[in-house]
Every structure is written in structure tokens, then in C-alpha cells.
Length: 386
Ligand SMILES: *Cc1c(COP(=O)(O)O)cnc(C)c1O
Image 1 (cartoon, helix red, strand yellow):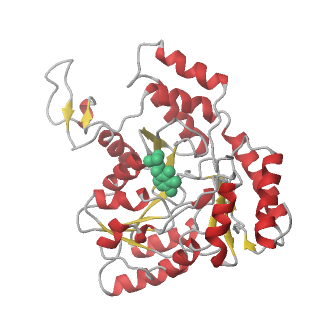
Image 2 (cartoon, rainbow, N blue to C red):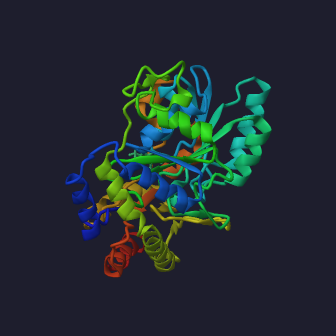
Image 3 (spheres, rainbow, N blue to C red):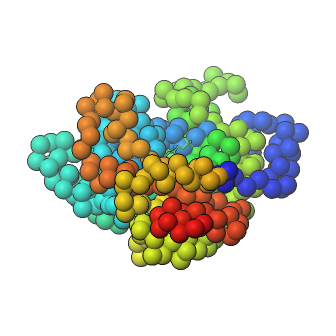
């Protein structure tokens, strides 16, 4: 089976992890701060906080942004459930903003409409979580303008988008978002096995997230109440968690970061090739906005004929093509249905779900594999012989 995504681990990655295993620190050593610096420097952010997953990063980011019980968080229904769950962890009320069917990202038009209605009945969100779907930045310039007008914070879920650019700058540089979160799960652009990281240009947000990632404990006298009892002293000043990244993960991350631009370039070349090869087939290819340069975590097509969705999907799997579907609209999950969401709430997202297929894309995929995938798809959609 050709997988839809897969990590690339080379000898230098393996050596970097082995070095850590032979060193004094398996956790809370020098590699995690080095990894944080490496990502912050690369994307042009002032601060980075590495943790054990993007899910954890989203959680502590929401807390740092002051999301409290009864507050509102809005995100895109076409995302992984973690984009919404982070709001529920904080006791907030989660709601969704429908997508733009061409980019699969949160629609700024739908967002503005919903904000106008919310302003009228006093239900404005405190945090909005735009998702950089597939690695293409959400329309953050528009969303920033709305944030300034309606007073919400932007927590950008860039789990797909490390190495992507917006307006020529790396995603995560903080010119539009208050906090940006990356994921390093093995299917993503670079990996630390499990792992996530939040970047921000706000020193206080970074400090709060850092505290929350490790029990709310500090050894910094400047943050303590009163004097230190002695050299051993630390204080718990917030209710935090153990969300720490290990040294092995950080070493792998540092090693992978060296190849970030190569990975993105290879993914972009394969995506461009898909664009060419799929031209003329009865499907919609992912539209790219002018301001964006995607990191191409995913290449998602939408079939014109939704009635073929299941059969095309199954036939591709039968042919050894590991297609997938990103994502089941979050509000259609049973847990969210129990919270009161219904079918029909976000029609663009639901229509997308009846047509979308993620076809394989990863940096070590060969052109032969890609040709095979396209010929199978062509055969299924046009009856041509594969
Ligand atoms: C992968 C992913 C997450 C969660 O990342 P983890 O590191 O696995 O916790 C969150 N949001 C989106 C959009 C993702 O793709």
C-alpha cells in the first residue's frame, strides 16, 4: 500500500537520538530549548514553547489566551478534532465557521457574517482557531482585520503548515496570529514522533505557556511570591500539566528541521505534478490563494460526482493506494452531536465531506508511484484502462 503520508528518517536523525540516549539528560536538558530556538529562528517568531503534542500546545495556548468556562471558541469544522477539543478542555463553548469549498479553509465571509450576528446577541468569541488546511495558510489578513474589529484572539492551528509561507513570510512569524501551533506527528511535515510547538511574539503568552507545560512550576525568582527558601526552591504558581517534550524528541526535531525547506520543496513539486496530471478529470483540485505557498501536507481532491465517492475510495484502496479522508466534519462526530450540533449546520463542510479524498503525498514518494495513482484514478473516473 502506498501510504497517504509517511515520515522520512535518515542516519543523521538516528545518530542524533542515539547521542541523547548516551547523554546525561533524557528530559529537561539542552535539546528542547535548542529545538525551540531552531523553530523560532526559522519561522521568524520571538518565542517558542515545545510540548508533547500539538493537542497539548493548543490546550495551553487557549489557557494562555485567557479562555475560560463560558467563553466562546470558534474553529473550522474541517479539521482534526483537536482544533475544537482545546476549547472544551477550558470549559468554553465551541462553535464552527463554515469553509471556503475551494481552499478548504475557514471562510472569512462566513466568519464575518457569524461575527455580526454574534455581536448583536452578545455571543462574540474570545478565541478563533483558523486551520491552515493541507499546509495552505488560512486567510489570516482578513481574519486579523476581523479580530481587530471584534476583539478576539487568533490561535492559528498550523499543524499542517510548518515551512509554508504567507505573503512571502514563514507561517508562524506572528504578524497576524497571536499564537501559532505546529504538530510533529509522523504524517506531518517534520516529525518528533509525538510533539508540538507554539510560537508567539508575546513574551507573557510564551511565559504562561511554558509554565503550563510543566506543572505551573517556576525556578525563576522574578516570578515567585516572596523569597526563595534555598537553592532547592521552586514554586507552583499556576495549575499546569506535564506536557513536556523529551530530549530524544527534540534531538530528532532539530535534525529534521535541517531538511524542512527540502521537504516542502519536494512536496510542492509533487503537488504541481498532480495538478498537471489530474487536469481535465471530473474532480476539483485544491485551489491555492495568491498570498500562500503551501507546505503541502495533504493533496485533497473533490469528486464532481459525489455518488462515486465510496466506490472510488474503496477501489483506490483495493489497488494499493492508501487514500484517506481529511476530515469528517467535527460537528458530525457523536460527541459534538451530543453537544447539540446537527447535520446541515455547516453545509459547505458537509458537501466537501461527500467528495473529498486525500491522495498520497510525502517527500519520498516517487514519480512512478504518483503516475500509478493517477492512472488508477483516471481509470475509475473515465472508464479508461489503467
Ligand atoms: C495533527 C493535527 C493536530 C494534532 O496534532 P498532535 O500533534 O497529534 O496532537 C491538530 N490539528 C490539526 C489540524 C492536525 O492535523
